[in-house]
Image 1 (cartoon, rainbow, N blue to C red):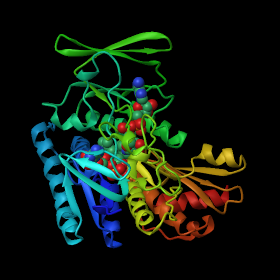
Image 2: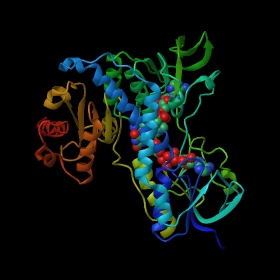
Image 3: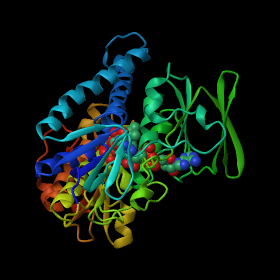
Image 4: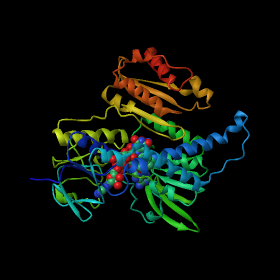
Length: 456
Ligand SMILES: Cc1cc2nc3c(=O)[nH]c(=O)nc-3n(C[C@H](O)[C@H](O)[C@H](O)COP(=O)(O)OP(=O)(O)OC[C@H]3O[C@@H](n4cnc5c(N)ncnc54)[C@H](O)[C@@H]3O)c2cc1C
Ligand SMILES: NC(=O)c1ccc[n+]([C@@H]2O[C@H](COP(=O)([O-])OP(=O)(O)OC[C@H]3O[C@@H](n4cnc5c(N)ncnc54)[C@H](O)[C@@H]3O)[C@@H](O)[C@H]2O)c1
């Protein structure tokens, strides 16, 4: 059969751009469909805006402590419209640096603007146009969900935060995953009273339990109210210019009046309107499952990035996009395992992890070893007044292999990235303990922890 394209990529976020570029580099006639903006969630409404807000929150905190260092400043205030402008202009700068239109042009990739919807196993409609492809790679990402409760429409979803007319004096954040935790820090640092609610027994459920505990402790010590293990959210009701949020905890009804409710309670794949049935692609309610080669149940339809539900991170999406493209063009024999996937969040304090959590390692071998090195024992965090935090190293029972690393505290994400690089290189614990770390740095905590693990 004569197809319009060899490879059709749906969605131009990190996964879709990586897939389209790799497919074109391999000589495939390639098109990418995007209904919104090149760069996807990551650049336009997710990582980049959140990171700029995290920097804003950081600056605000630092200015507030300036007097401790003998710097005299007036009480800082947030000019929200300027903050929003700053976020938007930074997004533009990142997009300029990425240079997607020129890249697409140079590689001869067709950009089809509009909503893609399957009309058959090899055919897709984009607006009033119909195209066909030998292989299709779904890189459709996900979106924040609105809980099915009365008044849910009054809540702000994470991508709507920048559209809030002003900063709320009080806010309830529903969901303590990566998004909810980061928004908690941002709102709290900028002056809002924050209540964080989660049905899970702890926030940041995918992190090591000590990381969840450390971030929770950090939140509480700064004045955030954290309620985990709640039974569920009941309703949001407008009342006298505010919102009354009701939930149940331990069977008891609870209620609070806040200026805003932010919902960060899950991230299902963008399946609406895709008409997967026309292509006989099977999905769950929240994702399109794939095999090791990123194939859906229909072998020529691949799924990369958030939409396959395996790992919702940019660093995973990019590798999956490239792998899916190579499998589509060259035959399905490449995999992209995620056992070494560093991740973390820019909360106050920051947190990060890579590899097995202590609980996962103990489930495999109860004799595995874990050591926790407090930031308070390392010079740089003391110098910077950032002693809250730790680095945990998880090793095998012989203290040879590093199985995982988890951190709470200043620069945790960079610290964990350094351990991830060591793990990727197959560095054993004894070698890591002999690495020289510049003084005084946060990453010096790695050397301290490695030596402590060897000694213990
Ligand atoms: C607030 C927030 C902060 C985050 N921070 C981080 C972080 O710091 N680090 C990190 O690693 N990850 C972070 N993430 C996660 C990260 O954004 C995602 O993992 C990443 O964007 C996934 O890439 P993707 O290409 O799979 O999907 P997306 O980036 O969501 O891109 C999907 C694209 O597909 C398009 N699309 C969907 N359906 C169709 C259709 N039918 N037709 C045409 N186009 C369609 C969409 O418009 C979108 O542009 C964050 C997420 C959020 C929400
Ligand atoms: N820094 C980062 O790397 C970063 C930042 C943001 C998002 N992300 C990625 O994006 C994806 C989505 O993250 P997310 O935090 O938006 O969603 P999530 O699914 O990771 O977390 C949702 C949270 O909401 C809670 N929840 C669900 N229903 C609830 C209810 N009825 N009441 C109260 N709480 C409820 C869940 O228990 C969970 O803790 C994640 O997989 C993450 O990997 C990454």
